[in-house]
Amino acid sequence: MMGLGNGRRSMKSPPLVLAALVACIIVLGFNYWIASSRSVDLQTRIMELEGRVRRAAAERGAVELKKNEFQGELEKQREQLDKIQSSHNFQLESVNKLYQDEKTS
Image 1 (cartoon, one colour):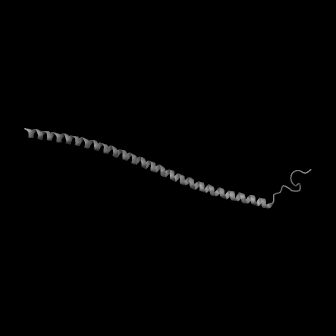
Image 2 (image 1 turned 180 degrees about the vertical axis):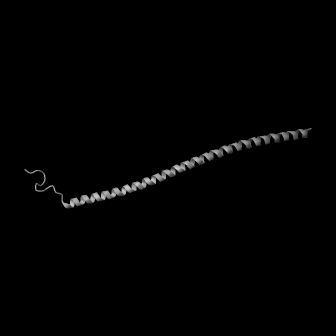
Image 3 (image 1 turned 120 degrees about the vertical axis):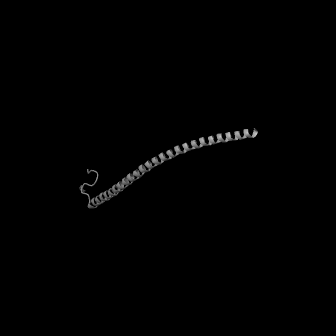
């Protein structure tokens, strides 16, 4: 009794199958090469973008410091303005009171 398959066939692969396998290996190799070069390009691009992000973050930090500094200065000037205004109001009240006293006298 014979086993599965034809007993007369030998283990030789036909040349067409070998050619197809070689063509597949070449196509896969070419695709791998293209994917690898794209990957390198993308990694380079990512590194450039990360550098930009770091620089933008540093610039933003500097801007935040300047903003806080200006806000502190603005607050100081507002306090000085309030003091000057209250002093002016006090002087104005004193002058008005003095005027009213002289007027009644």
